[in-house]
Amino acid sequence: MKFWKRILPILILALPVAAPALDLPTIVSADWLQKNGSDSSLRIVDIRKPEEYKAGHVPNAINVFYGSWAVTRNNLKNQLPENEDLVDLMKSSGIDMATPVVVVGKVDKMSDKVNSARVAWTLRNAGVTQVGILDGGFNKWSADKKPLSMKAGMAKEAKGKISLKGQFFASKADMTATLGKGIIVDTRTPEVFFGLSKHSFIARLGHPPHSVVLPSAWIFTKEGAFKTKEELSAYAAGVVGKDKTTEIITYCDTGRLASGWWFVLSEVLGYQNVKMYDGSMQEWAADASAPLVKYSWK
Image (cartoon, rainbow, N blue to C red; front, side, top):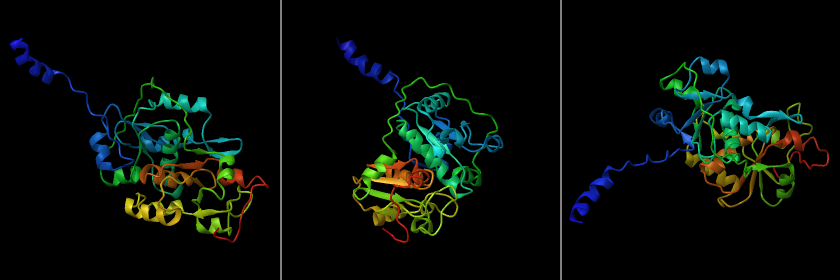
């Protein structure tokens, strides 16, 4: 017995210790990704065009172009893929619900800046628990002279669970039910919100009644990085308030810009009940019975 009392602590110390789970930030710095990018549990998804990826990318990144994650369905742009297609895409990308994912895009244009948020929304909607965005995109990575790879990344097919929860998805019916009750956030420009202009594919001018305007362009610095958490928190508090349990739906024209404020509110600032209207104004304005307001800030 004395022998085992002496030897047991040594045996316990000799047991293998499981590596700690990767603590993935929602806004991922280039330094963090350089340090952790070789972690075998991490999936780095470059959503740029294949030719851009081939010219140089973050080491260990795989290329899954943005257009695979947001498709045209029922004549609506930037929609979620069919459930079966999304599951197949995730599995082939080596992603299940337990896979930490960093999305790498570019920040050349406004649409580029929010593409990463749109993919993050899709993954979170599919139940992936840890999703981060490379701050400043590949532009920042390259500008910081971080290492580049020309070798195409490979992903083993994911075998884990995928459950398309849809907890961040808002439908047209959800929008209708929320009008005048929750907070509807228009993430387009003030001019478009007010009804002075619109894209040609949007049927009517204006915004749904009781909406507030919070442009996604305000999220980013001129270099395309996220503004500080303090700045973003101040913007949010001034427009949607400080109650983080309030029901909030973000929208834009196609469900692209709106993903920017969905990501900031839900994933960065901790608002607990934020959804994005995938159909957005391309669906809403096409229905003549869906109410719109022009020349008003309410």
